[in-house]
Length: 359
Ligand code: HPA
Ligand code: ZN
Image 1 (cartoon, helix red, strand yellow):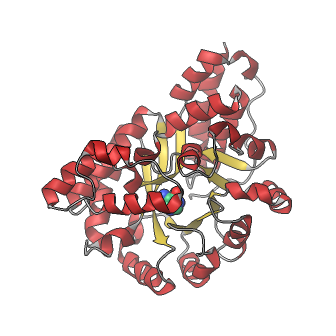
Image 2 (spheres, helix red, strand yellow; image 1 turned 60 degrees about the vertical axis):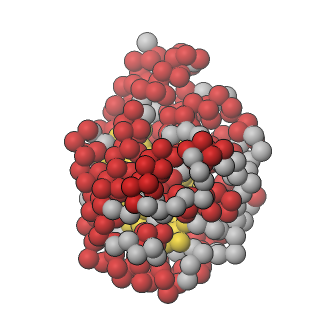
């Protein structure tokens, strides 16, 4: 049975974290097994593949070249990113395109030591353009199968686009029912401000009745109150981002005592101007307050780094110690929707990795 663990993971007493510093800590970050819980598959579309697919499918992109796309990756806020992100996703048309997209992410994730990844897919972005839901699921399923053979477990979470209506979300939920075995849950993403979680209370109640996991983006650009309503009205198992929770002391206490997982994305927050500099990021503060935070890459092709790069840059910017890195990695396995046996196997490998580095 798969579930999310709400007990705070504690490290084995025999690991000497003080002995792991500098280059040793960097080596541990590279080598340790990792879980990723917040990554949009469309956000892993690198410009080269975007252009290749657009040419093959005769889709026109609003940029003349790969270089021009990369140059446009200077965002002011979430919406300025989403405009480009949805334009890029229009290059994806066939089952082979979705397989290529999924496989390319998996190759990067494997190189980064990811062993388990729960990946968002923005189905409506594709169905609205006339792409069949089966094209998306079948293509990604082939990537899931390929990844499993390489030692990476990939699971899909279907996100509702919150700038669209409740009715559109219900239609998407209905369309997903025949594909039930292809995904583990539902999420909520896209433009946050003005689209509070409670807009989708009834949709999420229907999702929960199916017995699937539900998560939601909240408190990225939107206020801390959206984190509260994601918990109260949508009854989410995890909050995606959630960094604005730092504005509400009572909410911070609640998140700590209930051990609500927050899938924090440092490089995303930097690129979308949620923080001015990585050294201003509240991750360390949240970790020290006992919150179940971990590191994720969000939209790695757009934000300058996959999971390992997020770990390396965040560790350097916030001066995180080996004990912090262990906690972040362990929190990710706790918050993964996996069986207890899988969790224990990953934790054993994680602990071995730190133990060896400390010797
Ligand atoms: N926030 C909201 N919607 C998104 C994001 C994000 O960071 N990435 C892709 N869709
Ligand atoms: Zn996201």
